Image (cartoon, rainbow, N blue to C red):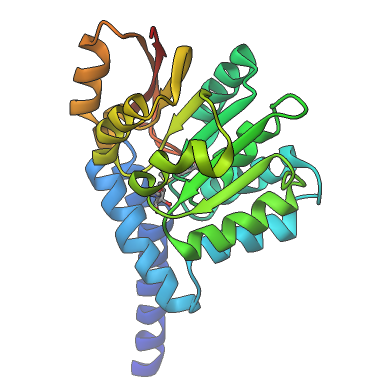
Length: 265
Ligand SMILES: C[S@@+](CC[C@H](N)C(=O)[O-])C[C@H]1O[C@@H](n2cnc3c(N)ncnc32)[C@H](O)[C@@H]1O
């Protein structure tokens, strides 16, 4: 009898913990940016890394290889969104803000694109799949483990021809863009790396002459985690015409958005 009580208590405790992990805590944190990021990006990631002896980017790549069709970028994007909505949150621009990104890319129809912050290549695939023939997307990532995963995700989507993934820090590479890649200016820059780099890298791109009249900067996460110094600069500078697109932090209900800023020269 005592054994039976013990076994039932263990099963009940395990079920309670699972319900907390799977539904209760995610539902409780989904309206609070700080808590959502601590839960998904710190606690759950570390716990699953330890339990599975793998990394989140590796698990994301496995999901792509299992669920997406080779050479079909749409299925790659869908596989990542399904993984992040139903299994594990990840810091991609995500499906909701991704639609805004898509519409900006389609509107501009850029020939040259710079992406700052590749992570696993989700937004890279989203952008590259919409580019016209002969267009070029350069994406920068300073974490070699993320870059290795992103290369495989981009290859799975069949987009290697359109994408040049460069490993290294934005501050080091931006000044070398012209001589190393023969770039004159970028039609579109997607800023999605660490938030304290948005402003210095924007000023660096201006100094290096990488922006022309009409170049568009599209910045993610301007509300959550937030980029107050960048927003203040870009909205008050007479050199930019800027507009905010309200949305939500990837895979949550926390307010976040994209800032689209057109360089006026
Ligand atoms: C939010 S994630 C990018 C998500 C990706 N754009 C997407 O939507 O799929 C930010 C990435 O930027 C990288 N990163 C941060 N600061 C960087 C810098 N200064 N230079 C290059 N990469 C950077 C990080 O390692 C991280 O992988």
